[in-house]
Image (cartoon, rainbow, N blue to C red; front, side, top):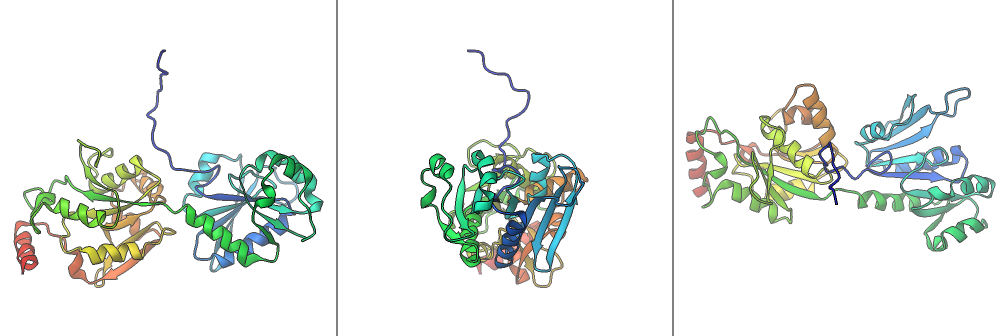
Length: 368
């Protein structure tokens, strides 16, 4: 059999749904009822980044005009765009959100919440084939029965969780669980293979604790059950990740890790910070905020975060690539200008060791 020819490299893709990494379509009732549910739930889940994807309901506008509402503590930010729906563009637009609510009366969603309203029975029948992943049911009226065509097509539908329209807390809690299920696992990335010009030798091979520092850093992450890789120029085994973004230093290493697995968060750790210990790793993991672009350390007297003791979330990857497209390859610059969870610690823990003199002084301090 002839092997099928492929022109393009088969890259690992982010686990997107139709329009976003995590989406829920709500359908089966009037649009104002759906938007009201979304608004109330969003207030209960204000710790997440949420948005509402809808069609414009103004009269005499193109059918494909879109309205997007972003929910946050100061209210709703409405973004109205026009033009054909393009799932690739929408996935970029919604990459930074924990969950996208979709008006299922207009657009299909990978997961669905079905509202039972006798007045909209015909509308539900029209979209019957879109109801392939119902999460739960909302009844407008407790006496409303399941439509016969629903029971016929989805025989277990009566076993789904069912809430009343006023039970916003229970609905919010169920959606909260759906968001939690999509939080990315964390993997470790130890940056090695730098030029170490000032040190004059490979900093990852320096011995502070009886073995090369790269092994110490890897062990620090693995002790917290993080599958950990070395970022290297050219991989020779399964626990190394080759640099695919050449001559970009740590920035290239981070992007290469995301290219290998864009569905994981990456705890990035440099090898020139030997005073980072188990307590610091615990602290970063404890305060990880997956709703942010990253969770980063900052010295109390420092102006900026330390980009190489940081958990980068999957949503960081498209932002890093956007910076690269503008000619920037500094991960700190991206973090400074993004929504980042910052943990302040004493400066001494994040001292960079860059010269032979600093190495001797640091080794003496560690031994003592």
